[in-house]
Structures are given as C-alpha cells and as structure tokens.
Length: 187
Ligand code: AMP
Image (cartoon, rainbow, N blue to C red; front, side):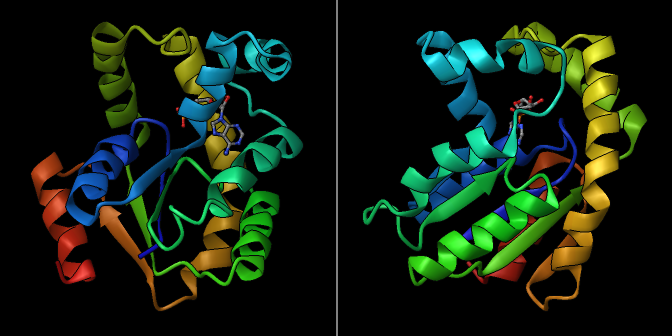
C-alpha cells in the first residue's frame, strides 16, 4: 500500500508515518529527513539547501524531485511507500503521479491531517525542546506555516476529488488519529 500523509508542519505526519512503517512493514519517505541528511553529510545539495531550510522556505522542486526518484524506483520499497512531507506543491504532486505511473504504482490512500495554526505553534515549540531542530523557532514556524497555506490549496484540489482522500482532524490525540487511519486502511 502506498500512502501519502499530508498536512502542515507539526500536524503529526512523522509520528503517524513511523507507526505505519511498523504496522505495514513499509518505508517512510520523509523529504524533510532526506534533505536534513544531505546537510548533515555536507554534500553539494546540502550546501545549496541549508539557507532555505533554516529560513523555513521550500527547497526547489528540482532538488526534491531528483532525491525522491531513487525511493520510488527502489524495487524493495515498491508498493510500501509512506510519503511524509511530499508532495507539498502541485508541481511535486504531478511529478509523483508521473513517477508512480512510470513504475507501475499508484497511491492507495491520502490522509490529510488538518490542524490550525495555534495547535501547530504549541506542538512545534514542544518539539524544539525534544528534537532540537534548527528550523523549529517561532519565526520559522510561522514562515513554514504560511508557506504551507500558500501552496496547499492546489495540492488539496488535486487530491480531494479522489475517493481515497481522507480528511482527519489533526488536533485529536495521536492514538485517535492512528485509529481513524487504521479504520480506512482496514488493518
Ligand atoms: P519537514 O521535516 O517535512 O517539516 O521539512 C523541513 C523543511 O524541509 C521544510 O521547511 C522545507 O524547507 C524542506 N522540505 C521538506 N520537504 C519538502 C518538499 N517536499 N518540498 C520542498 N521543501 C521541502
């Protein structure tokens, strides 16, 4: 089963993705983690993206799309992909459609974890203490949320007509969200 977890930063996509990875024996494809790894390894890409990431701006679609390709075409991961933080723009959504089509795959479920700004700010402040992420400060959080709002609508419009699109109240407790997701997955 290929699954997309969609929603603002701090919506709990990563938490649910990690749970689903265990439950479904899948592979988490977190573009945020993939990009942070490039920075950590100080690669050419890492050097290019560090400023954008620290400022809460998007990394260019070209870079993200090129990194993603390896995951979608990996035969071991085929049909077991759990996308967390991708796609984030209409261009990325269309790119994903193409990659999946070219590799004879499809998206089985899209979960939209909908959360308001106040909850996000509270959660990310907490995460900053726990995970020490350099982009988890209040200015950056707000910038990331605004970037998300600006680019979200076309992505939601792209998916929301599909019968496999499910909106879930992301302000619920983690376990409740998990139960709702599992009910749609029949697991
Ligand atoms: P995340 O861990 O998903 O919250 O992502 C952290 C940061 O990585 C974002 O604020 C962006 O700068 C960058 N990023 C992650 N995924 C994407 C994506 N799909 N497109 C563009 N930038 C991304």
